[in-house]
Image (cartoon, rainbow, N blue to C red):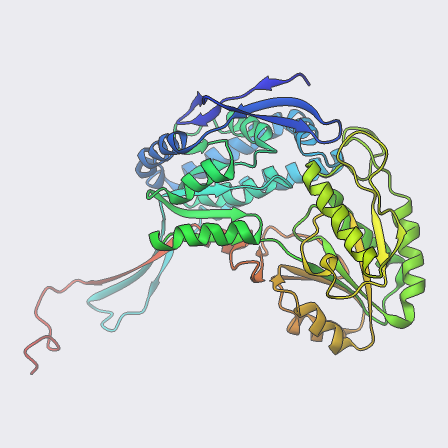
Amino acid sequence: MTSESRGMWIGGEHVVADRWIESFDPATEEVIGRVPAGGAAQVDRAVAAAKAAFDDWRYLAANDRAELLHEAYARSMAHHGELVELLTREQGKPRPEQEEEAEWALTSLRYYAELGRNGLGRVVPSAEPRTQLNLVLKEPYGVVGAIVPWNYPLLLLGWKLAPALAAGNTVVVKPSELTSLVTLEWIERCFDHFPPGVVNVVTGSGAEAGEALVRHPDVRVVAMTGSVATGQRIASVAAPLMKHLHLELGGKDAFVVAPDAELEPAADALAYSALLNSGQVCTSSERVFVPAARREEFAEALTAKVGELRLGHGLDAGTDLGPLADAAFRDKVDAHVRDAVDRGARVLTGGQRPDRRGWFYEPTVLVDVDDDMVIMTEETFGPTIPVATYDGFDEVIDRVNASELGLGATLRSSDPLLIKRFYERVKAGTVWINDPLTDNYAGPFGGMKMTGGGRELGPEGLETFLETKHVHWDFDQASKDWWFPYR
């Protein structure tokens, strides 16, 4: 793919700025395109377009909004191949994983198209049912600001965009600087049949375009997936404006091998859940706990599995792991590994930057790790598997809960008593038993504790973009006995 320049998408038009941001292929470090470095002026223009489009969009029949979302799905499928190739070049993970991401992102359009046709409230009992009607209404907020990360740029945009639009909101998207090309490609090609201003994209840095979007007084909802630090910054800016926040702020997910677990399939499951997208998943298994008596046997099975995996360009057949998305992310992974080794951990496989071009890091298995090592406390977001041991099951649950993050957790077991104890006591938004990282359109996704309280997918994902209004309607205009003066 040759390098190309793309404009922002605002009010149904292409818009450029005075400065540009280059986009790279992380497997080759080559520039593949550039997008405008937008700022407050472009955010103002996009929000104004979204605000102007809101009334007509919110009062459009839900069935008509649904048909437009279904048409966006059909157009997306028609451009599926181009989207997947561009996503692979810009983001880096292997093509099969990009195809799965695209499928999840696109299918969310169909899911929320249908969910949005359903009720937007309910009738509740009245004190005087002969003369009163009480309604609970669900209404769109207005303009939604969607701030989307680079690791799953289409999927995490779809999970915000589809329910926000189905609920009757208009949207301004601020994609990551690392994956703006594929975001613009998707919106321009597949949403240009929407009324102008309903969907807008402003590219630029988080410090400029992102902060301007959060600060804008006409943006009533900010939906963001990203780091805890970014979420805290957004909350501090949005709190004085009383904005509705939907924040998913990463994880440090635990993977627990129970005493009864079969080790070979457990090793297979862990390799997948820790190394998918080279570990650049908010639900990656980043803390592993194995019974002390079974550590050696499990480590041997895990090391053999990881040793089979092949690094390469995401478009190359046979690639299992692609590069990290940026050189700085690769350096962070290496720093976490070096810290663990300096403090007594042993590397069983990997632990190095391979001698090749691109921002690659070898898939790495470490043992003899302690819970207070950086690799067990901070989100690494890379292809590392630190394995710790435990003696008792209640002990390991306490250690799982010791993290300030609570996005997900996985248990490998067939013991129903252990399984029930685990999912009842572990503080995490999703608990997987034996099948990690599996999402469900109808099941809510989100976290607890410092991960944030927002939910995506399921009816909860639609509710995120609807606010509640109570209407008390008395048909009789006569004075009431309970008004002043008291009788």
